[in-house]
Each structure stands twice: as C-alpha cells, then as structure tokens.
Length: 183
Image 1: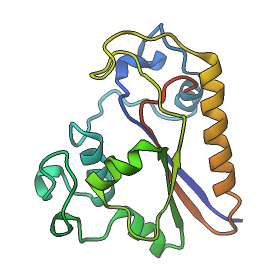
Image 2: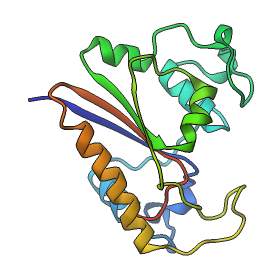
Image 3: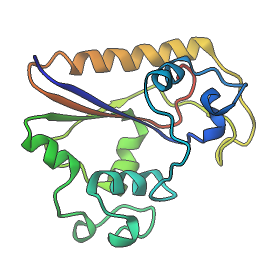
Image 4: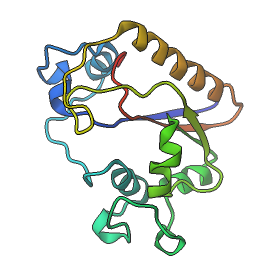
C-alpha cells in the first residue's frame, strides 16, 4: 500500500471567511467537514505578510528575517536557500513530491520562493483562480458561483486523481490561491 500525503493551504483565508469561526455569508461545506473531523485552531499566525515568504518559511524552517528573502521579488542564485528543505526530507523518505496550484503562480510566486528542489513535479492548473471576498485586489464583495465551484472542484479532483495513480509514495502540496467557491 502506497502512502498519500496531501497538505492543503489557502491563500487569502482570513478567519472571518469561515463558518467554523462564525461567518454566515460563505458556505464552505468541505472545510466545515474537515474541521468537524479535525482540530480547529483559535490562535494561529503566519510567518510573513506575503504568500511566497510564508511558504518559504514553512518549507525551509527559516523565518524570513533569518533568510536572505527580504522582499517580494525573484531571488538571485546566491539568495536561494541552500539547506535541506521539507521537499528534500520527503524525497529522502521515498516520496515523490508534487505542487498543485494556479497556473499564474508558476511565473510569479515560485520564482520568489524557490525552495522546492529540482525533482518536485509542478501541476499549474488553469481556471481555478477566482475573486475572493474583500481583498486588496478585489475591494467589493462577490457572490458565490455554484457553477464555477463545480468547475474548479472538477479540475482539482482530476489533477489529484492523476497524481495518486502513481505506484509509489506521494506527497502533494496543494495551494489554493484565491480559490474560494466550492471550498
């Protein structure tokens, strides 16, 4: 039996978006189900104000102030992390590593963090990015779109199913940037 480990992360996810923390506007049945079966954190923090810096910290074990990453920009070769990352450790334990995220992040955030290693397989998905509530780039509220939710879920499910067909241990980090409908 092969192991399947999936780490889910969500960009632009304030506590105030989720019904498990009292929100009554958005419906998040999948997150609610995960919360009902798991742990709900009442005190949680991020390592940095930008996504790239946050997952750089998450996968290297360094806070941004400990690294050479001081701003949201492409890292030079000399600034990149040279220690052992989470992905390196997973590969040493026999896992094939995958990253699933929205297509635009390949040209943007990946270059700003570069802590994944050469063997990590990337799955840039087109069509899953959506406007999300009140946010710096979207100052107006948006309405839920059930059709977009179904389309997004189908794209993600097909990708994960394809990855999980492999006949070896798999680690998948699925980052959902600005994906809200269908959560």
